[in-house]
Amino acid sequence: MRGGVRLGHDPVRDVGILLHPEGVLLLNDTGAAVLALCDGATGEHAVTRALAGRYASVSSEEVRSFLAELARRRLVEACPAPPERIDG
Image (cartoon, rainbow, N blue to C red; front, side, top):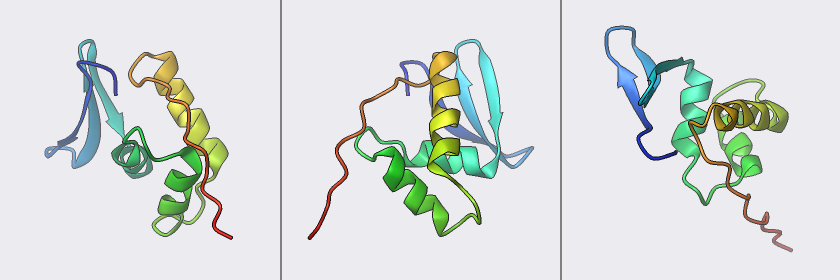
């Protein structure tokens, strides 16, 4: 997340929120789960794999698109994904 932006929870609405200096962005369950997994070390494919166990149809493209939109709004910083580890 960028400076001044943090992930939170709105107990009244029972939804995840992204607090930022200009306001609050309400998140659905999947969006909150994506952001909770974004730690600067976990790549897009690893986030997608982690979410696959909880949600029926989450694609890498949806994760990429969501994060790109948040980056466009300057709420998250785009980080180069670490190389995917291949165990042989």
